[in-house]
Image: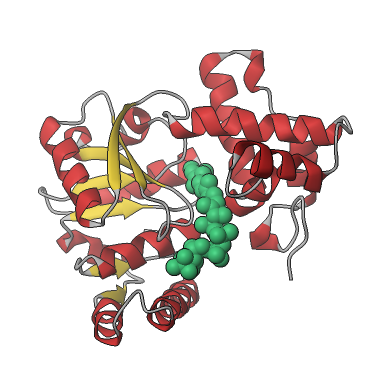
Amino acid sequence: MGAGQMGTGIAQVAAQSGFTVHLNDVSPSLIEKALGAIRGNLDRAVEKGRLSAEAREAAAARIEPAPDLATAGGADLVVEAIVENVEAKKGLFARLDAACGPHTLLATNTSSISITELAASTKRPDRFVGMHFFNPVPVMKLVEIIRGIATSQETVETAKSVALKMEKTPVEVQDSPGFAGNRMLLPMINEAFYCLMEGVASAEDIDTVMKLGMNHPMGPLALADLIGLDTCLSILEVLNAGFGDPKYRPCPLLRKMVKAGYLGRKTGRGVYTYQ
Ligand code: 3HC
C-alpha cells in the first residue's frame, strides 16, 4: 500500500525475491509512475551485470497494479507505506482489516508512529507488526521488525522470515518512539540543522565533516534531503512528544524549510537544490 519512494522500493525487492506483489495507491497514475521507476532500476541492475535479463523479466512480471483496495483481500501480507500521518494510516488499516482474510498479516513501514496504536485500529493486533525498511530500499540491508503490545511471536517470526527472503537483515525492536534507528539518526540530523542555522559551518562543510571525519556515505543534510524534510520533522515531533525531553526539539530552521515546501529531493529543493 503506497507507491511512493519506500513502497516502490519494497515492491521491487519483494518481486525480485520471488513474491507476487500487488501495488496499490490512491491513483492509478501514481502506480504507473512507480512501475516505471522499478523498471528503470531493474534495467540499471541488468546493465551493471547484477541481474540477468531473465530475472528482470520475471521480477517485473510479478508486480501487478492494484488500484482497488479489495485486491488486498487475498494477500498473505500487506505492507503499508503511505503518508506518515497517524489518522491516514489508522483509516487505511481499518479498511484493510475489513477487506482482508483472517490469515492476512498487516505490516506497517512507519518510521516512528506507535505500532501498538496503529494495531488498535484493527481487530487483529496479534497479526500486526512493524516492518521498517531503510531508504533506498534496494540498497539498505536493515529491516527493523517492531513488536506492538499484542503482536504474536508467530507474526514476528513470519515478518523476520519475509525480510530474510528479501535478503535483508531483520533486527527485533520494541515499540518505543523512533524505534532504534530513527531514535539515533534523527538527533544527528537535527543537530546538523542547528549547526547550519547557527552558522557553525556551511551545508557542504557540515556534510563533509561527517563524510570525511566519520566515514558516513553521505552527510546528514544530504541524507535529510533524501529522507524528506517533512518526514524528518514528523519523526522528531514523535520523539519530542514521546520522551518529553528537550533534546529532541526540532530545529526551527527545519520547521521553516518544511513550511516553505522545501522537502528535499522529492520537491527538487531541500537543503540543496536538485534538477
Ligand atoms: N535504488 C536502487 N539502487 C540504488 C539507489 C536507489 N534509489 N540509489 C543508489 N543505488 C545503488 C546504485 O545503483 C549503486 O549500485 P552499484 O554499487 O551496484 O553500482 C549503489 O547503490 C551506490 O550508488 P551510487 O554509486 O550512485 O552512490 P553512492 O555510492 O553515493 O550511494 C547511497 C548512494 C546508497 C544512497 C549512499 O550514499 C548511502 O548509503 N547513503 C546513506 C543512506 C542512508 O543512511 N539511508 C537510511 C536513511 S534513514 C531511513 O530510511 C529510515 C526512515 O524511516 C527515515
